Length: 481
Image 1 (cartoon, rainbow, N blue to C red):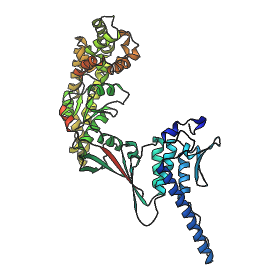
Image 2 (image 1 turned 90 degrees about the vertical axis):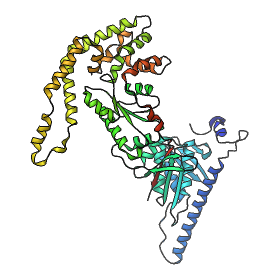
Image 3 (image 1 turned 135 degrees about the vertical axis):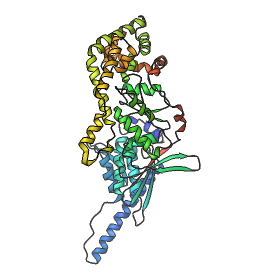
Image 4 (image 1 turned 180 degrees about the vertical axis):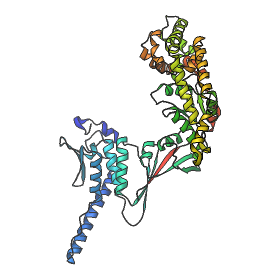
């Protein structure tokens, strides 16, 4: 809504206008800025006239017409608000709605429209001479919609190539949008001394993610999935002192932890990660642990909602009239007899393929020589005892199925669809079981569910929490030269 129709003076109160009379006064600085722009406009026009007279007196050609600073402000404003047009006449600014033709004065502009006009007028009123001008903008995102922010400042930078722009901001998206700029991180400020650092490119971490994490006061925990998934819901609830960052699959978690720890700018941080077990061998999991990459005690995060303690809590909450132990027993039988044992061969083959893949990825190729590449590669692959691997997997899986060892079944069962097949045992829709469990995490009854979950997730080092520095803000410097 624009304008002040119907005598509504709420915007008048917002800007300090007098409610007793309809004599509107703009903010003093806003008036002064527009007055300076108008004065500059008149001065630039006068100089052009003088140049024309000078050429005329000497029989020369008149100079090419050029836009004044005020005319450039009109162009920039119109490009930011394509549905409207900024007008200037007789020392007054107004805006016109292109579709309807309605015109309203500057005093009735929205906050965003006024901010764009004010900022553009400020920047383009700065004198243009041989001196290099330095513009420092504190929190450029204030009073501007995110959709306007990047567009406005990129146009102002292009209009003032003679100026160096320095922004002080907490807005990560604004910082990362300045791809050609230097970024300076304010690590700390003790009231007297500033601790700042120039950010360097990091091929292992996306710049946006790096900047978001730099401004964080908690240790970093990379997890699988996204912010709408089960991983994030469980880990953000069970690790409240950590900044939980979902980055996709297990490969992304591993790469993110390694890249973060390898970055010298992260010396005050210790990033950790959590991945699904996913048929990995004990030796592989132990190697990851040394690098701060932890694993679940079940095959995948969905299986946490299949564990006996968790199902008891959910049975008592979803079906309070039923016997929780009976529900848990039925679900266990369903999973072993319907979802694991009949598909044992497939589970075994999936486990063998993934474990072989992990072994191949872990092979050290530094010993392969150009003159004997084929034989060297075969020798490395031959070190993998595939028959022994397959035999061990088959023995473990069959033992769990035949012995009804439910705890071991959840270690081997890697099927995300199973958790979506048991809701009816609890009196809820199968497809709603996970959703309702996640919802319970954030309620007063969530503490018992969290207690049931914790034995199946890693214990993270609590001392890492105390190591995080008190970072403040990220600064982005843009040189438009």
